[in-house]
Length: 331
Ligand code: G3H
Ligand code: 13P
Ligand code: ZN
Image 1 (cartoon, protein in one colour):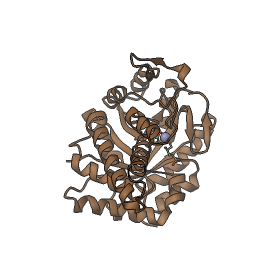
Image 2 (cartoon, protein in one colour; image 1 turned 90 degrees about the horizontal axis):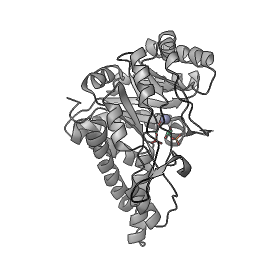
Image 3 (cartoon, rainbow, N blue to C red; image 1 turned 120 degrees about the vertical axis):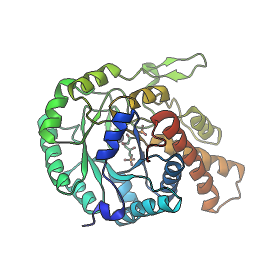
Image 4 (spheres, rainbow, N blue to C red; image 1 turned 45 degrees about the horizontal axis):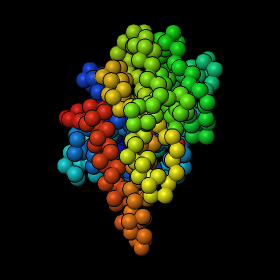
């Protein structure tokens, strides 16, 4: 058993308290490899932002649990070396069992999500409570979820949203003891968040998705004032990356995300953690495709992963400064 405290990491409790009071959200960026981790830390050090390094179960299998523990420790040491040690949370994204959450805690995670949202309500409560009881013995914070996002979560895909029911949140929070709650108000995972027929078109013919359900968010906040709320599926699917990918041989059709202004709005409320994964994937893929197109003779991975990493850093800095508002909040 290794404690996250020995790795230089923190749990999310204090970060969320400050984020709600300061009307911003802490970025939760998914990572699987060294370049993503470097880009995240460089962006957070330069903007002085706290950060949640987020690992899905698929990412954990991909990267290896032992390597991840050292990468997270390395992330903190790296931030110090870059001149500004930022608060770093190592968080399990969409944990689906008690055993997985327990194992992550034993390998140095400071925060876990137990996603029981696909289960019937009572089972979600029981599973979440069991994880909270174990996690809190180790001062690890826990995120639960109520409501189901449309889109794909690991191998599970849901055709439609089932919005969080505000009348359940008080009971869920008090019965489980969770530290934060992920809700469903119209965001969804991946680069295809809405079908074209669910969208309208702007003057340039671009797809405009239906707005987030701020009314449900307000109702939830009324029932659990000041309680930390999490938004999953919050990539905006930047058009310039979609265009670049398509221009350089890719094939992304009708990809559409959540407008950044709506996320900025949400970050000013009790939403204190915003999850972004797909936008990073798009930025890396766009740049790698461009290098392959522009320099077809290149075969040194550093020559395409390096520019991809730089683009990723730019994207993260933009999110921190212009969308989440977490710049300067690591002080
Ligand atoms: O919510 C899902 C995250 O984007 C993680 O995706 O399971 O493909 O690693 P993944
Ligand atoms: P995106 O697919 O919108 O980036 O969402 C990521 C996420 O919610 C990770 O849990
Ligand atoms: Zn998610």
